[in-house]
Image 1: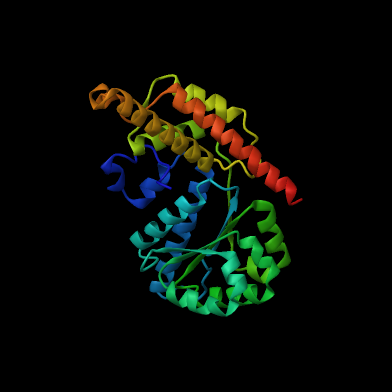
Image 2: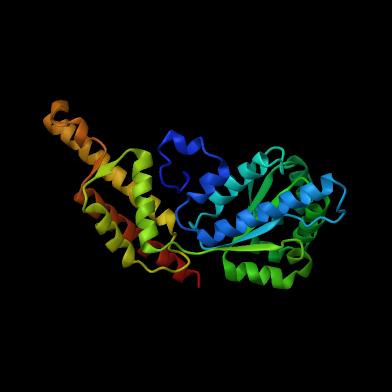
Length: 293
């Protein structure tokens, strides 16, 4: 997913520092404050070590808690770039690892860390590690061994992540920063819609943001809602509808009928058809979820 920051279609956005890009992300005001404070602490530790004033070291490992689509991956990517810019990491990649792969092969965890030197390991759905004491033990050992070279970010639902930490004092003692990512407000989700359209170079009339907000407002904001992912799905469904409509017009009326202004322009029909498709998909997923209970 592209960065959820205002003005990201403008090349000037990408010329800014990663810290400036972080501050321009939509919403997440408390997250930004905690992240920047944590970075400042890491810098202070480095200065102390470089001057021989400190032998202790507090690892920079973190937990990102919250529902899907709340910006955890975007923040992790920007954090990696910031840490490189501040000479706190040497490489700055974000290596995304599903927790289930660590559970199935705990013996591979040390090599994962060795290959991730100078980068961030981002473990999604980390709460599933609770089912594998061997994986947790190997994680804790590797987090200690590579604490100067690797930053681990464990991500997942707040409730399940808290259960993981409560059950494993050794793990929680190595993750000092637990950062909560709140759900986006309806207004923020409309801003994200506008941004995604801008990034994809689609236009719409002045009524569209109001229609989008109305559609968002009637959704169940449970843990399966999706936040920015929900908006991305809406935009992509609208793109499908706009594309099909354009081709039908092209086939029936000819190329000359389609003006440049009408290309990549969302109509109310594009939006309403997308809403129907999304609501049908939501109902299907809820039936599947209920079927597993």
